[in-house]
Image (tube, rainbow, N blue to C red; front, side, top):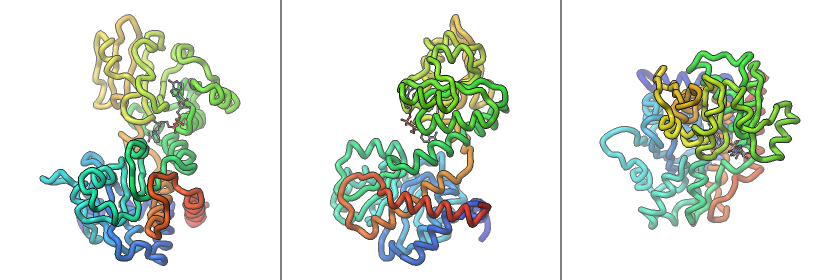
Length: 382
Ligand SMILES: NC(=O)c1ccc[n+]([C@@H]2O[C@H](COP(=O)([O-])OP(=O)(O)OC[C@H]3O[C@@H](n4cnc5c(N)ncnc54)[C@H](O)[C@@H]3O)[C@@H](O)[C@H]2O)c1
């Protein structure tokens, strides 16, 4: 192997060397060959991690046709590697209708991130629906979109189970977000006062990793039960207004829109750093903050300081986009655990017999993915 593909192959080899959950999945699929004779259509962010998954899925037989979920997240070396392995990959180029190109190949199974392939199939090629054995949805946004669609074949949703919130949301984001903050700003957490807004799985991970990094953490949560949980986890749980007078960094993890804006920030400590770890770019109302500022400085490409009228200076990172994703920060392990569940869900769908419509990934599949991950830890370092 040479050129760009060799770069992707070496990245995948590095990940597999220290946490071989993907090769363990591949060994299983090589024995069961569940995709033999089938076409698998995939829409995903074509990164080296999905490359590690697809290499192993291919050991289960079948033909793979892929499209990039976004050009911005496509790694050309991964595209070369997968094409070299015989997969059809629609990534960059003059023809933009990549999802349709995948659907035109008449997939029996679908891997979707954002319900893009499922939506294209239902709306534009409904005559092909009958041949689809099933689909698996990877992303939270796809999971939300699927709630609006009536899908006549089985879809396994990986977001609503137990595994993803416990591992990817809590540990993946909890660890990766602070790494991203350090990479972007150079801030060391020791001795800093940090506010975590929202105490779901993501917020719990953010609070725990910030404390482990030496910060004094406060949690702002609207649900009184979770406020109490935060208290017994050892975190003060003040109101947002109280916390803003003290904290130097505030991270949002609510899944809501505009949970922090100029009004609340008027009483904030000068120099407050605002970071989003939740979904999309609407948790921090950046447009309103800009509108309420007398001036702003672009400190670096992803660091903007706003001077609020009659208020403090606040610094927004990455324009309020989820920072761990923007910086591609953190260990890949939680994502690979999620991918192990994906591989097992696809194997289950190939067998058939599941009810039509969207269901939560079965608990026994998640348990099996967890067993593979535990085995992978044993194989690596313990
Ligand atoms: N950055 C990433 O890589 C990544 C990964 C996974 C999930 N997410 C996103 O992170 C967000 C949080 O995920 P989760 O699993 O913790 O969700 P969750 O819904 O379990 O938790 C959100 C918490 O925020 C609280 N909340 C909502 N609005 C609030 C407000 N205005 N003030 C105080 N508390 C408020 C809710 O009561 C809830 O407890 C979701 O949007 C999810 O899509 C991001």
